[in-house]
Amino acid sequence: MPDKIIEKKLPFNGIIHTYPKLKTDLNLHRNKKCVVYLAYELNGISLSINLYKDISIIVSDWNGQIIDLNSTEAIAIKAKNLLALYQSELFLFLKGLKIDEIQMFFVDQPGFPLVDTILNPSRFSSPGAISEIFGKFLNFYPMMTELLLDDSVIKAIVHKIGMYKQKLIIKPSRFVQSVDSSQPDPDYLLIN
Image (cartoon, rainbow, N blue to C red):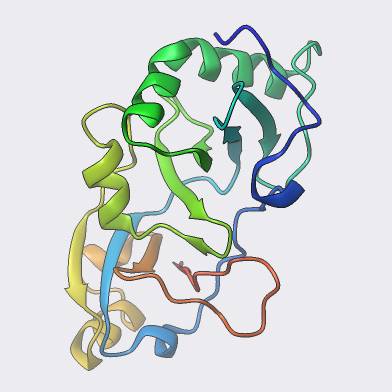
């Protein structure tokens, strides 16, 4: 664990991003390449890390609420377990990649799989970047498939055919910024 955990110094000009609200309109990504995941719980722990000079970490939940690591609440214990899981190797890894600022979203389940990152203050990383950059070092949430979200796939999703019988999260394979949002909003889809 780093020597200093500074709770007031935040990356990205003091903004703690929240996890995006998932949408349901399949037409948002019609005829675009997308990545399909088995749905994960929409709560977890976020690490906002600044590595410019000293290591500064802000630990929060996915709603942007800072977690007090001195607390005995369940979320604080999980956050301490997440930090202990990766300890300083994560910071060395990020420095080796020359990543000075990052916000990482880990889902609240065994192994704390990484589901998203923000490397740029205005957008989430693409799913492929997460697996390519972090896949050999961190536990990340595996994708089911990558596909073109064409009319036949949309029909299969709507009628719950084959693998689409399950609850799914669909992400564009390339980042797409929603135009009506002040925070990064990648237009992820939740399909029940």
